Length: 256
Image (cartoon, rainbow, N blue to C red):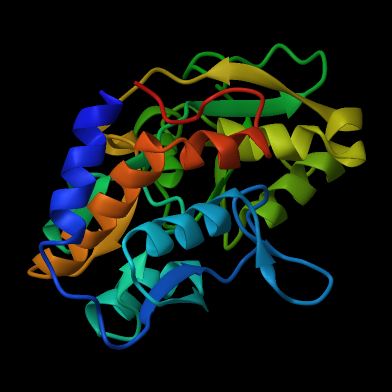
């Protein structure tokens, strides 16, 4: 498998010319640890930042990480303000009506988080009559609207995941739905551990939750898509992907 990936990466990397200008890689301006967040000096760090840098290096691209507000990140791409999105964006059919995607570079379950010891479950019945928090313009907002909103007391939509987490800690909502890895980081904090626990993964719906996370690219940008795909394949083949992942997670997050 690694030999095939290496061959694919090499054929794509050397089949196109290097980009002359920096490729602007859009990430969400809102902190989303452990994937991307600013450190004390204001530099962006995290697993996804390291992956972006590794992919760009492998693809021989000069890249500039460019923070953009999450709710405007696709318009920023389509208008040319950025060249690609690498911000934990799930590959979904709805988004593919507007933009294209690279191959996936990770895929993790979606979970429901609620107070320690509560009887909440990640089902319509288990969330009936509860107030559920979710981040705006995410696959989680769409999922909750379809499966949980009909029986919930209320769905509260937040601009950032951190705001939803804070309201859960404060007891202003009963549960939140989000990516499992991001929630692992939240539950590892003092506030998260004191208040909350995972209630398990929701039932999968690939149409809404997508086919993993990929880099968003403008339609027709086939050369850039090929370079990013080559970079992803290269870092998987040479072990860089696993080495980066081990710095943040106990096991692989690439998925099936």
